[in-house]
Amino acid sequence: MSIVGQDFWIVAVGCAKGQESGEKKDALLSQLKKFPTLRGSSASLQEPYKFEVPDGDRSLLFGSFDNLIRLTDDLAKADSQVDSILHRLERQYVELDPKARFVVKSQRKDLPVLDYLGNWSWDEAKYPKSRSIPDMLTYAMSTVNHIDEEARNKTAQFNDFKTQMSSLAKKDAANLAGRDLIDVLTPDRVKADGGADDDFISTEHLTTIPVIVPRGGEDDFLKTYHTMQENIVPMSARQFKGVDDKDGNTLWRVVMFRSAVDGFKKSCREKRFAVRDFEYSKDGYVKLEQQRKNVEESVKRQRDLVYGLYQAAWSDVFVAWMHIKAMRVFVESVLRFGMPPSFASFIMSPKGDSTLARKALADTLGKQAGAISASMSETADGDDEFFPYVSLSFTLFTVNRESK
Image 1 (cartoon, rainbow, N blue to C red):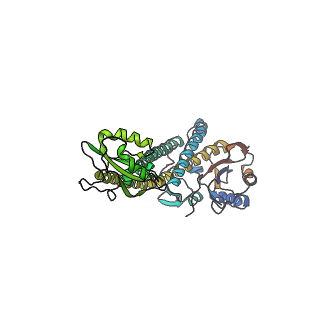
Image 2 (image 1 turned 60 degrees about the horizontal axis):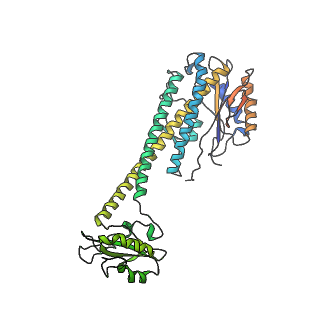
Image 3 (image 1 turned 135 degrees about the vertical axis):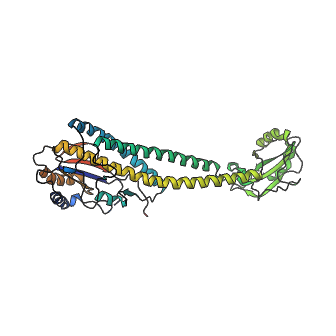
């Protein structure tokens, strides 16, 4: 079973006086682990884990009760915004590398995503609890928006280089009419010794015109080309050997006075010979090949840069997202269960029937909540339901990846 599309739940319930200790919370976790309906697949969290949101003596600072009410909306909006940014980064990373591996860099450790979630704890270095929740939210969103802007800018630069590379790339068309002649008439195929017998003659008065002759039309072309217009050099028609296409079309050249070019083109169109505008230049070919090489190297460098950026950006945004989730759990728990802040929070990813999983949570956490009335809470599909506990949900990954 893939982790893509799998829902994760963060739930919290108030702790009565005398039940704030870690042992009591561990006991509550043990009860949750007994329910098969709360277990996840092998690709997800296989059982519930503690989600250590600071409470009690080490709780977060929020100021007044009015601040809590405002924070409810502010945190929900920030949560949604970061969700969108994170999953865009995920999509861009996977588009760049279909086998992308997502690792969380947190508190000087590189952790697989599930290990990070299963052992989540508040990052005091990034989000010191001496700062209020509004200040930490402002810092988190500033960080995320800066990362998002940088990722957008680097992605735009990368796409510009790819566009340049595409415009300079060889056009592998099936027939000669669709190919760029600079890649067909290369220096190894064109005689250019500076003499009268060169394939391309170009002087003040003379020029050379390439012509595509359809299969079976060679005899007609050779009989008529010098009569199509005045001032065409007799016996100047010459086939470029080894240059043809799947339809049997062949490529020729004709030398003429520049004054004859327009009339020659018109006559060729009438006889269904395709004239191509092209001036041969060895220096031009060499310059183009160097441009292609330079742009290709730029694309590779930019790809490596963007690849590393997506890795780091996704990790940093994900860490910020989980701390915003934790702030939401704290605020909703205080509003739900009162002061002083005392609650137990857990994270899980049930693989089976969500209704049965919700019933298991209600049976366990509902008893813990005691007489506290049910209140409205967020669910995975965005609808409103009543649970006797705080509940936040999120989808970790939304884009399928190739297996390693």
